[in-house]
Each structure stands twice: as structure tokens, then as C-alpha cells.
Image (cartoon, rainbow, N blue to C red; front, side, top):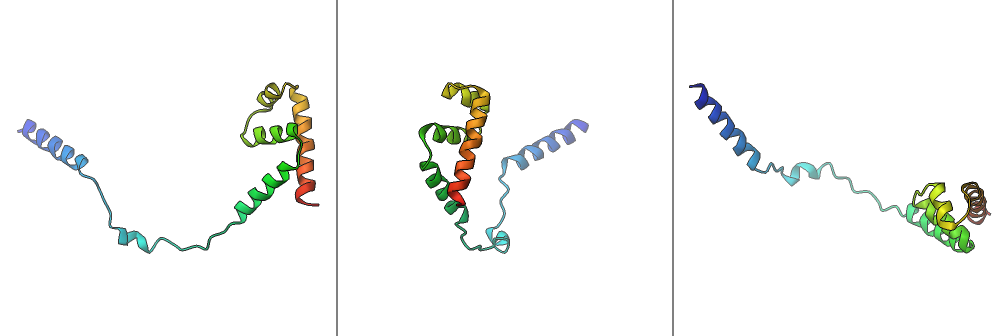
Length: 103
């Protein structure tokens, strides 16, 4: 008797996991809010790239590597400079970008 109950429970469990559980779309329609498109982030990125365009080649490389979240050690190895020099150049490049973006 125990074995019959166990096999029945196992077969019911297998059947329940095979079926896809779906929900009606109309249930979620009231949760979706229409928001106005906000392009401020895109405009800020465009302004940043325009400001980066005004930097020299070394500073551009520094900024782009920094934006890719590369550590200063890797940036220094890529550019062939010391890690400390990479930090100094990065701070100077950031200052130039601040001056370009906020004159």
C-alpha cells in the first residue's frame, strides 16, 4: 500500500513539472505604466563622447580603458607607463573633461 501511494505521488509530481505555468497577460496590463521617454542619459553620453573627442590620443585611450573598468595596472601595462603615471594622467584627463563639459 505504501509503495502504491509513493508511486502515485511521484507520478503526480512529474506531471506537474512538465506543464508550463502561464499567466494571463491581462493580469499584468494594469501594472505596466506608460512613462515618457527620457533622453537625458543619451544626451549626457553624447556630450561625454564629444568632450572625449577633444582630448589627445593618450588621454582618449586612458578614458576609454577607464570606462571599461580596467584596473590602473592593466591600463599602465597597455600604454607602457607606470601605474602611478597612469593615475596622474587619468586625474588630469578628468580635469580636462570637467573643464570641457562645464566651462
